Image (cartoon, rainbow, N blue to C red; front, side, top):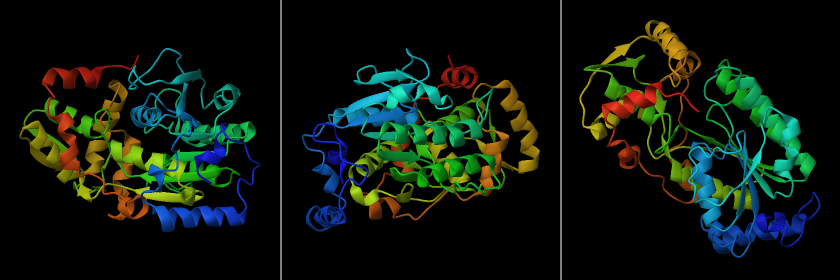
Length: 360
């Protein structure tokens, strides 16, 4: 039940892709002969799989597209703007199809002929007409329904730690509603729930670095600075998605993933300051006092460092088990301090430009 069975190259099976006996054989082969951690290195040999990535021009999508294309797969991207590549390198061979997850009528063309879908489209904060419910929840439902209608069986969703449709927090509630739609489907789904992701184009470490550079002398730490995160390097996330796509044992499973260490918000800020080679006095500011400041920044800045809804998430532990990646995927993710070298060159002008730059 690896992606070979979903590929148009060989055949397109019925909804019951494998008999119980064949699935049992495949799983035994992977776990006892190849080993779960190394199976993905051989299962895709000489097989070109057609994969749709929603959110392909974003942070995760651009890195994933590059990796899957390098493996020889046919990558298609769902984009709202036909000429926009976003973070996606121009050298990556990708077919673009214009569509919008909030407009179901635009999705059939993107899904036609695909073997698998990786659904990445989501928003971390609401702005303009983009709402949590409209994109994170209903947008996911729309893609799930379109995949089912198109006969695409394999579906991978990137969600978030602590996502829950009954959560008191709007963002996590919307991500949980998206998960519910995936789990209720007839698709061969897998859900990946990462902690915060970091890499050259992220809006976590970069946002902190930006405002550490801009803010003179004193930097406010929201709350007590003890909110916990488990930063995961983008290339490790891409490796996880690639293996999930290929390994049958991951079907109908949810995986919480994070880096190899639990770090407080304060510890993360201090590590970024070391990379920036700057010093700031860190002052802890109670959340109620920061809320009006964040509201103001949310109003005037195109890319605020935080929003009031994200401020609430400091109450939620953003960590999972430290060995989650190694136990489930057979490799050790990289440490935060060792991967944030992309922050070394962060001059004041760049920080100021990025803080006030509006997206085209």
